[in-house]
Length: 361
Ligand code: DAH
Image (cartoon, rainbow, N blue to C red; front, side, top):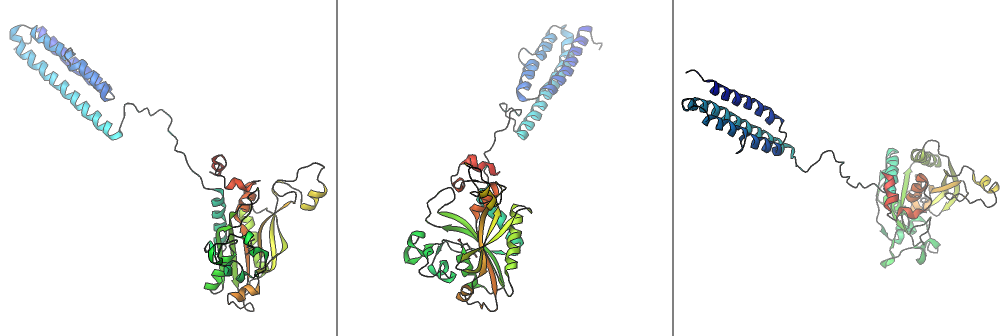
């Protein structure tokens, strides 16, 4: 049968619509836009309905063939819409696209914590002494008088034992006032050679001010062996200072006294805030000048006590002082942190002010 001109024209329109539909469907980037395209194509007043209305306008004998041809094309358009819908649904499920989500907005920041400066220096101290071959050990915070005083050669009448200078609890026990207690516990339980460090909290009834807390941290160090000398002590603590503060840090060992060491010394570091050495700082201070907040004009900051373990301490733990010698040291962790970051008030470390703490990211 020869197709008439109106039939051929209708089929051509249908084919053109199919091609157009294919383009529009591909351009519909999400389900909402697909719904609009779909309505314009196959909705009640859509363009496919238009075509189908064109069939009834044809001469009767042409309607069957034309109708078949147009409906085949209409069927393909409907199938293309379905195919595009499943495609977009799969894509939406995969990426969880929420129509209200705008990926161009800035993200919401999760508040991020930071390590406390005391934790930071403690970790650094740990790394340094571990590298020098020291083992980390711990001791109890509630101690007896033997480990806190007697074994450390602190006699009964010594002022460090005063009721008012310690937090005593029942049974003559106390919150340890120094980590030197751990030296005793280690030497009671292990044979030399020994190389240990003991970080921990200590307690003293101090009035809190810019340089004092009633609870703070110390790191105790102890090395005992057959020929440990003061030269070993100096090398060890100088290495510590250089690792902690940089190779150019200036150190000074100053003679001192502790009951549990003989000889005893204190290690001072050059004040980073004022460049004058102690004597000159005083002599050349201008009238009315305020002394350096960090070192009080001394030019040096004391960071730790140290010395050769007293023979009486060794004897108290059954180590023969004729055969073994040792050195010990005890440093204040908060002081190390203050010197490290040039803090002029120790209370910054316990006030939990996020404006201060967030600077240690
Ligand atoms: N225990 C002392 C204090 O709390 C610090 C100290 C000094 C510890 C000398 C030592 C040392 O081991 O040898 O002030």
